[in-house]
Length: 220
Image (cartoon, rainbow, N blue to C red; front, top):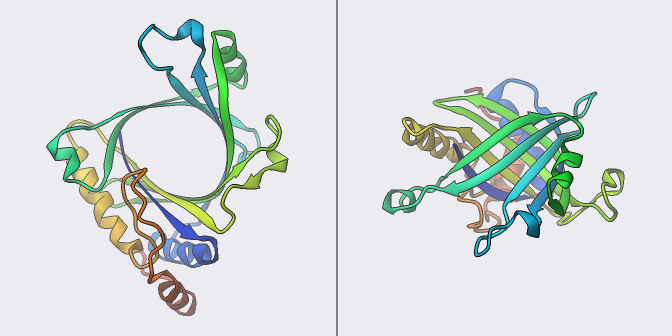
């Protein structure tokens, strides 16, 4: 399983966020360029009365040799405990795959629902949990698989996502670590469960200007 929060930031403040993350991590950023294909099971695979299953194929284009990953996101934790925390805890399964994985899923009856290209950067931290912060521009493809022609869906806004792997016996500790880490970014953006975005933080402009003039934060 994993713990995840998301937020949005104006593109004009992304450089300041990068400065902050660089100062906190002390290590270079990782380049992100991921072609994401969302597939849904066709009629032949859907049991009567159930919803189509969904799987995402991620092609990492930032590497010299593109690599593929199969990603299935399951249900999120439910109950009173889940409602009281600001981090989403959900089941997730990932597996590396060969470059013919798309052909395989087409062959067993899955259909392409939509595809995106995410471009940006990521930083990794070890602070109570293995935390990854990803900042990306989400782009649509005007033609099938035409990643070189991708255009931003929201040019003025970028997506920020914090994720951390967890297990049934330690997710409370991971939730605490992610929640504490979010406080470092609070002046620039608000992070919450996916789908619960509260929009742009009013203090972002002032915080960004301060960061750019001071050159970042302290290494964790």
